[in-house]
Length: 178
Image (cartoon, rainbow, N blue to C red; front, side, top):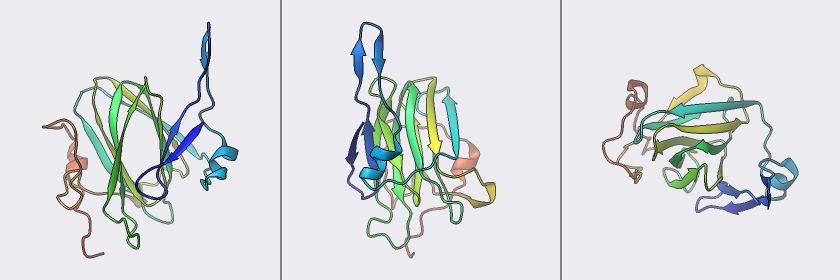
């Protein structure tokens, strides 16, 4: 695994190191020892999958607040997404800043998103399927979000006129006063 830090501290892009032969490939996609070597302590408590049928759909921006805050490792099993993490840690110097990565079945990248970040994505192809490794169990009473098109965040979503469900259109703006 190649683990690369991104522009906001604690966010990482993980790239698989494929061992290929005539059968196909083999790659390690999770290794606690390699993650710990760069300071990532991650215990898998839950694994989720999502299928999004329509190109241009945005899911997000979701997170869980303490004491049920969660870290995520997200990868595309089929299709392609623009995957985004927004720093929502009130005391962080990068509060309100975001990083986006293209995840696809072809590039096999994994986005590591620690606790304290809202997460969302826009599908770039129809019938896109993602897998999430989660460090915490889902807790509806701790679930929160921020509005995907908050002008303070100014996320550069790649496709215009996205489709969102009502739940994701109801999230508040990020707290600029924090």
